[in-house]
Length: 220
Image (cartoon, rainbow, N blue to C red):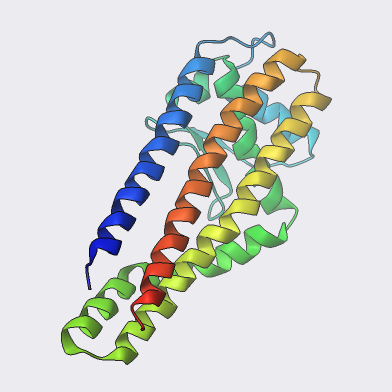
């Protein structure tokens, strides 16, 4: 079951994951040291983007290191210490990306609503698919292996749906930065940061798809 093919899958997945993370870290670090001519912190730029889009009632919270996200459960944005308080290109790009998610939520963006609806299913499937797979292997029950594949397919679907949500949030951020008059050179830096971050989601979706293909191969 855990053949040479599976070992190759693990190696390829690890290389993809580490490669994507190394690239995003390099871009974030590079533009963390480049100040914006706006002189605004990430929070201030994010608040301005919210106002530009007419979105109200979205608080910002200071999170831990690399803790940047929009939480639809309480309609809030959390930024890591750098993005929260520094006036760098990375800080502005990060904050405006998360504001992009807040705008999606406020405007009922379809892919975000679909992804949110998948969360309970994916939370269950992510914990159950491996149990079903191992039980199917040791009990030699094809039905359990099929169940594991179905459960894992929901996790892959979630990863795929995440892509347009993330791409759209970055697109909204870049549209705002252009409309608000951020100089072209600084916008290029912001785009580099957002593109690098998007690559991590692409890598995660690719790894999940490869894993699903491997699982499908076990049905033969």
